[in-house]
Length: 184
Image 1 (cartoon, one colour):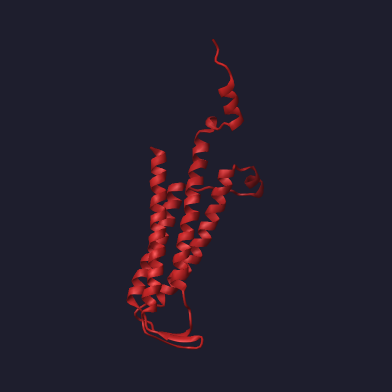
Image 2 (image 1 turned 60 degrees about the vertical axis):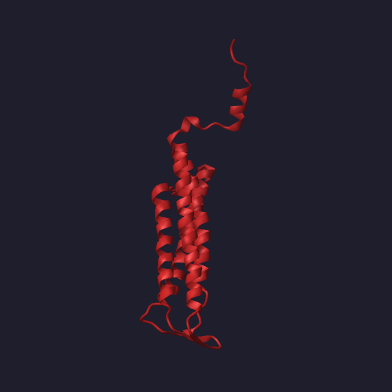
């Protein structure tokens, strides 16, 4: 039952990140439909309320996917280089995926928020062109989904290994046990 729940959580996380990515890209499309005046690297653009709504929804879904993954996977903590060297490969993967998911979250969040705020109704942007913030943020949502699912799966494996340490066998031990004849 737990494995089925893990699969459903992974699907939920990926669905949230994919929808956030698509909304970010759609926000960019809606923003490009608005009338603008461009001279060399400077441009004046009217805000797009549709792009604002789509960008805001993308930010919310991105944050929700990150929160769900981190709350349900738990916290994998490595406090020193020595502990990292002694850690299992699952724990090392969990730690690396957690760091990368936070980095992707930070970059995607900043891009989506800045693109969304530039489409606020109260602002008319004039200045240096900031193109493709929403679409790049949307693409980073997809990458965030990959890292956060890798974190969830590896953290679940670490928690399973820590709860059941006696079930950890090396493949050689399992093969030796299978090859031994049964007592008559």
